[in-house]
Length: 237
Image (cartoon, rainbow, N blue to C red; front, side, top):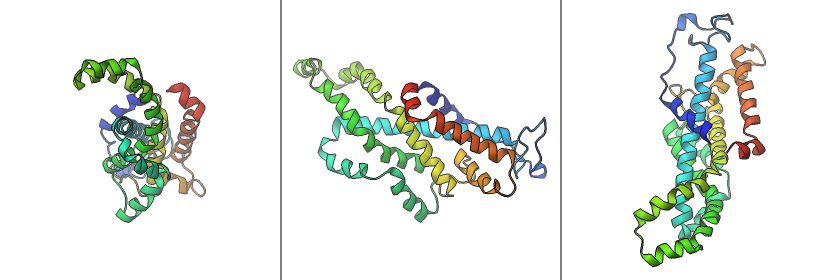
């Protein structure tokens, strides 16, 4: 979980400077992957776009976990609604909505993804919290009339530890949700570069006029898919 949270800082990094008159340069020692059409160093753009996508996924996963904990703790009255939301993957909600709106910017996309991923996290979180709610410790807290602030201070680290076990799956859902919408032209706009947007621009060229940036972007996605495989994700979390 820690290495994923480190990418939150990438959301604050500035954009690369544009140099249109140096666009489309071939790979050189100064520019190992050449430059893109707007003159940005292709290697730096690949690194920045990838880091921003990972940071977006981390921020969205944190939101989904916080909402999932809230649903697991206080959402028993609406279990039917959460079950209905869990019946379909988040992308099946986002694709028609993004198409109708002509695309979604990073902030509303992150909020929507967090809201849609949270119901999927609620059942395992509720099962973990149920162990605490049926424990002597919780009975003692209620019997002694401990204030909510004191209970939260004592037990929130334990609750977050339980939620952190689900962080990798939430992170992966957010990462591929953003990348899929961006690759379809329905995600963050040109001012919010990401790995998905980079792929959308470069993949069509691989069959006719392949560029080092396109191959590097494809390799980055395959590497992410390998690192984020279910077995590795559980071990890394």
